Image (cartoon, rainbow, N blue to C red; front, side, top):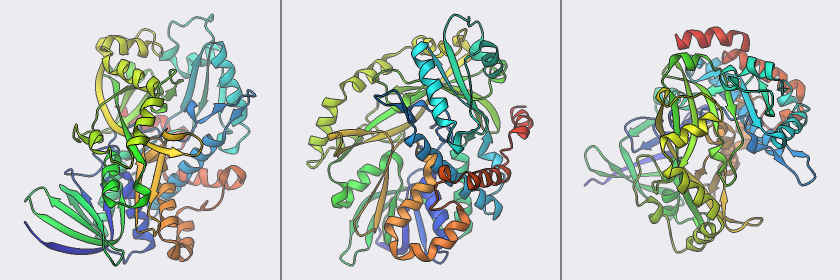
Length: 506
């Protein structure tokens, strides 16, 4: 037992991409502030941010069909797609700033250019995709998108998927070459290396046990040093809880009014990974299909070229699953422990509403490898079981809360920021698009929690994110300028992509 008492300006809980991003932003805006990080695992980026635990899509709504919905009148609502793309452009700008300022190096270690495609089958879906393409291609952010329902063109784009398909089945795809594959694990590790070089104290194998607000408004954090078993107490004026699925239990410990009536529903995922180099070479792109009826948006099937451990991989999934754990390394009592008197009705209401989702998850959990292969064969008709292995992806905790539109116990599919009224503590909950929107979400936290500083910080923010405060969809010239500049800095020139990809896969 120890009574170590330490003071910091800022405490970041969790060494994932969110804390890494917030820490990196604050180091540029307030370099004199003391920042301390606590992570219960032995290194950074091991949970949701890890490259094997997420789809690494660089979510820009270029291929994810769930970001565009069909309205009752048959028109396509592009609002969410534009918002997600705008957010990703902000992340790209900040990463470019870090590379240009020599704060991180070798962008190809964490971001690679890869075409993003949407693929649909059946008359009705083909009609939807065409309408989606027409709606999006009028927006500057999506103007380079191509559409085709011609067999020969599709064979050129996705030869592996089009093998043995006949002209009698309606099939169509859209393709945009400016998509990316992002290795968020590598990016997180780079950002933490940078933070440690700027005297940020990063404590691994330190588990946060409790969080309490003191009478002066600051926060005291009780931390367990897992190596020597000692208990430490740390105080800070501002705390960010960025512990992925582990954020909800910690938020509940704060007792802030904003933490009430919020629950979490854990969903786990599996991917198939191709072990046959010949097949891996036949596919180049991220190809997203349509989610099955009743499936959560994070279960949209996709066949992805990924760059992991400096080589080209091919993954298909995700297959949803259920585990009561809130983190991959969590406890089987996480879900039960998160049920409190203030959220029990919210949780029960969600349970009653989401019977379809529960049934879907049970079916997924009980699926055999051969049943999963059948799903893969909808993408690759002649896929062979021996060419594919199963890997367990990360845990996601979907937020359950009471909303004006959805009523009591509404399951949220997205990323949620919860912050105290006085701005002294903030937590990030939820899932996709998650890591791709880390920079805009952390800027939102800075605006909410540091209103007194934001004015003086604005010139520096604009240096790091030139489009800050501007909608690129409404400023096509600025979008083109920024997109070209970030493409150059991050090495995303599509023409050079093939050579780069070849050298990575060899």
